[in-house]
Picture 1 (cartoon, rainbow, N blue to C red):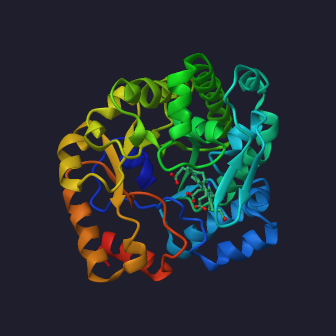
Picture 2 (picture 1 turned 90 degrees about the vertical axis):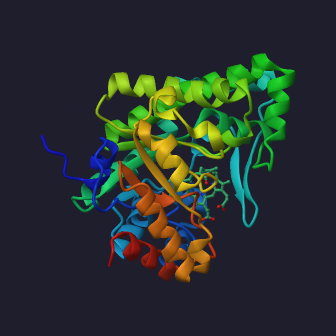
Length: 344
Ligand code: CP3
């Protein structure tokens, strides 16, 4: 069977004359239509758990820009909630969760195998999207990596340096390892169900990989992701996996094999020239335009976009930002980026 979708072709290792494009947080607050649907839903979590509206916001950037991939609209913190943690979002500040720092709190979590009931609306969103996306658009499902999800479950919020998670790792390794294990197992259950519902590609977001140093990087960023990719690959060998160990820096080299991923997503902390020589040699890469260009636009956006496309033109590449687009971005700059990549 010939693969038609450009994202799947790139993920299978093909160097395309024009790289396919999508954008992290492509459904988000920089779009007026997103803000309108979010207001209709009431709040962010109600939007995530409303399959019709979550599918609608997933489709909005596809309609507006014709991206080559759609990413399921949900959040990495729905999984802790499915495990029994309280979760709420404080407007203007971000997520808040009940914390897990003791053996009793860890033991009170639900079993990993039981997360599907709570997450069934997410699978419903995927089913709606599978029927409504344009034929050439690839549907990406996702989850957070165990380390990144654990940083939020331990601190109860986002932290600049993931200090509370590092402290628990150093002071109570038994509880810390137990938490990583249950998140890993629950993520396998969650992502398997996403694939069963129709997700064609899976992305693992390790947004805080950059704060793991020395042996910790291999043990807590790589190994849990590797366990997830092994489980998914043995059940669904044809579903490509993208891993995003954000902030990995020079450790970005050789990660395809270490993680067992088809594609490594790059943040903008590494240069495209360096990554072409040290990461793309292992397979497809995704990235890595700095998100601020979506705010500032102009000649710098065009020049930087061209530089990235050129640097990766010799191998498989999916064009993306180095991190999520921010709410202050100008939607017209997104169009300028797309036109530049496509040579229009
Ligand atoms: O368009 C997409 O990329 C798909 C949907 C998506 C969201 N979050 C929607 C969202 C995805 C893939 C995520 C992943 C996610 N969520 C990550 C990993 C990627 C990254 O950014 O590093 C993380 C760390 C989270 C946790 C999270 N969710 C935080 C820290 C915040 C608050 C910060 C912020 O940007 O407001 C969120 C909220 C969130 N998730 C929003 C969106 C569109 C904004 C919520 C709103 O509408 O108010």
